[in-house]
Structures are given as C-alpha cells and as structure tokens.
Image (cartoon, rainbow, N blue to C red; front, side, top):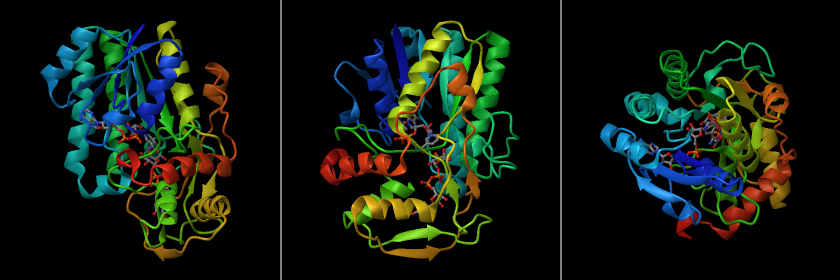
Length: 329
Ligand SMILES: NC(=O)c1ccc[n+]([C@@H]2O[C@H](COP(=O)([O-])OP(=O)(O)OC[C@H]3O[C@@H](n4cnc5c(N)ncnc54)[C@H](O)[C@@H]3O)[C@@H](O)[C@H]2O)c1
Ligand SMILES: O=c1ccn([C@@H]2O[C@H](COP(=O)(O)OP(=O)(O)O[C@H]3O[C@H](CO)[C@H](O)[C@H](O)[C@H]3O)[C@@H](O)[C@H]2O)c(=O)[nH]1
C-alpha cells in the first residue's frame, strides 16, 4: 500500500514515516522543507519537494504517486507566532489544506488522516476534554486547524472522502536511540527549550504567566510521546483502509502537568536546576488542555507505551545532548 505523507520531513512526520514503514507501507513525503529536514527521512522514503500552496504541483504529485491514503501533517505550528502573523497562518494552513483536499478530490480520492490539535478546544469548560466538547480556539493557529476540520467534513459530504482527525495534545520526546528528534527552526516548545537551556544555548527558562486559574498559576498541558503518537497514525491509516467512517480522536495521556511541574521534571532528569524567570502571559495560550482519549483507546485499540513524563523527557534529552544543533550537529 502506497501512502503520501505531507510534512513528513518534520518532527512528528519523520517519526510517523518510520512507524508506517515498519507497518509495511511504502511512503512518499510531500514537503517544502520550510521547517522540515531531508536528513530526517529514513531510507526508502521518497521526497517530493513541493509546496502545498502550489496547486498544480500538488495535483501532479497525487496523480503520480496515486496513494491509497494520505497523512496530512504539513502546517505552521506556533500558537504565539500565529497571533502576530495571521495571514501567513491562514494562507499556509487553510489554503494549503484546501489545495490538498481539492487536488485529492480531482485525482485519487484517498482517505486522509489529519493532524489536528487540542488548540481547537480553546478555553475548555471541563477537563479532561472529550471530542464533542465545544470548539472555540483562542489562537489563529487553532482556528486554521478547526477550519481544516470543517473542510474535511465538507469533502466527506460532497465527495465521500473519509478522514480521521487526530487532535494531538502536547507532543514531545524523541525516538529512543537518538537518531531523530525535535529540531524546529524557531524553538518555542517548553521541553525542547528547557533542554537547549541545559546545553547552554539559552540563559534561562521563561515561565509565560503565573496568574492562570490553575493550582500553581501556570498553564497545564497533556504531554504525549511522539512514538506513541506515530503509532496512533498507523492505527488511523489502517482503520481508514479497512473502510472506517470519518471520525475525530483526541490523542493525549489524560494527565495534566503545569509548566512548573514540567520544569521540575526536567530538573530531575538533568540532576541540576535550570534558572527560571516569570514572564508575561503568551497571547493565545489557554490555561489548561488535558485529553479524554478513551475513544481512540476503545475504538482503535491505541495503547501508549510512554506514560512517565520523566522517561519521555529522557528520550528527548538523549536526542538533544547527542545532537546539540539538531540535524546540523
Ligand atoms: N508539535 C506539537 O506539539 C503539535 C501538537 C498538535 C498538533 N501538531 C500538528 O502536527 C503537525 C506536525 O507538527 P510538527 O511538530 O512535526 O511540525 P514541523 O514544523 O516539524 O513539521 C511540519 C512540516 O510541514 C512542512 N510544511 C509546512 N508548510 C508546508 C507547505 N506549505 N507545503 C509543504 N510542506 C510544508 C514543513 O517543512 C515541516 O516538515 C502540524 O500540523 C501541527 O500543527 C503538532
Ligand atoms: O519557554 C516557554 C515555552 C512555553 N511555555 C509554556 O508552556 C506551555 C506549553 O507551550 P508549548 O509552546 O510547548 O506548547 P503549546 O501548548 O503552545 O502548543 C503545542 O501544543 C498545542 C496543542 O496543545 C498545539 O497543537 C501546538 O502546535 C503545539 O505547539 C504553554 O503554557 C506555554 O506558555 C513557557 O512557559 N515557557
């Protein structure tokens, strides 16, 4: 079976491409390498260096590869940046996704697994958050993902193209063995920044807000290991290829950790405390996002292997200390 993976040269994509290959799929990656790395691709994966904003190139790639299913990761991903540069986010994430959906509808009509996000829920009214909770993104990034979800629904209704939306919570860690890991050009993710601070590349860790309505005043998130998330994609692809109807699944562990608790866990793994400073809130950040992931566990039989935050951080640390400058190390 042939798969097209958009954004497969990125952090989550490159882990998932490997998991899909291990499950027996042949993978072509469509990526413009704006934040991904050709070096992150494993042997056997073919790279089509194409921008999703180039409609005819996307359509040509689909017509040539003729995938049985598509996994769609390609996007800009930063909550804070999306508030400052909304046009770039709407164009890349919404128009880019629309190009993919329309080109697919005009060619192979392959089912799609889509990278959605906990950010579609915004300020959640209850926690943990089930899939049918109200969607009210607090960031442009979250809005672009919710708009893409709506487009997927419309293409199912109009063209019978099925999809699975995977709403990831906070993805972290690295493939055990230290060969690939997180290397975003702009470093914004909490754990990646903390570990780069430990390597001396940053002076201190900033805590963005300590006046949130949470027990210690800092934001709460649900941290999931990238290898477990990659497995969720393999299960979603299999389900679609077996004829499953469209659906949405949260992917998280169901445990919330505050920014302070995450930094405490990083200190434990490093065996030494990082310097911390309180900074103002970052625009667009909801106070708490914790997943109710029962649906994917029950329906797709997803079972996370990494359930201990310190163990997850240790896998990320193995990657960063052996690749202090990412793929350029
Ligand atoms: N990292 C997280 O914690 C997290 C959480 C929830 C959802 N997500 C979603 O998961 C997906 C992957 O995230 P990631 O952390 O691996 O990010 P990433 O930046 O490492 O990967 C994104 C990939 O998409 C490519 N890309 C971006 N725009 C493109 C375009 N117009 N055409 C072709 N390729 C393009 C980039 O070059 C990159 O390889 C994204 O859709 C993101 O929104 C990530
Ligand atoms: O130096 C830092 C970096 C982050 N934070 C805080 O740590 C928490 C986590 O921030 P991240 O940037 O690591 O992750 P986000 O929750 O902002 O976003 C991530 O998870 C979301 C889903 O929950 C989205 O999908 C998004 O793509 C992905 O980047 C937030 O409260 C943030 O304000 C800090 O205090 N200091």
